[in-house]
Image (cartoon, rainbow, N blue to C red; front, side, top):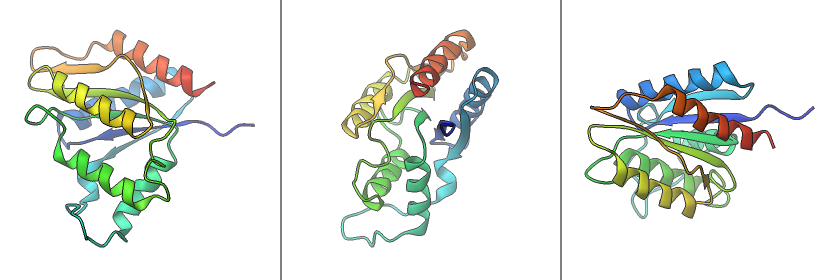
Length: 170
């Protein structure tokens, strides 16, 4: 019997995006037989990556293992200054330097991008899609967006997450 597929829901904050990740986990758990786990990048407390830094870091290795052991992802992060939150970029850099091949945590895995941002979050969604695709991730075309003026469209999120889990089951 094949091992159960695992979706890692990754939050870049301890606030609204973490709450969104929990809500999306609940949707997946109620509609599929896929294993899920939510992680919050804030809890990893990674040092700022900079050239020349020692890359043997137990915390970064633990985070890398989480990514390598996942079959798919749901990323929940806000737009920061028209782009990606620094904690997300820092985590991805650490993952890329602590795996055997820098793309090992991302390559050939499916992902959904979600955001809970004050504004539309569109600049984040575009920039992050580009980064994930560069890392070898297969990004779902539909995103999940929550703003100050727009709450979660649960039916739309269910369809998007169903598409993700359907691809993982192939």
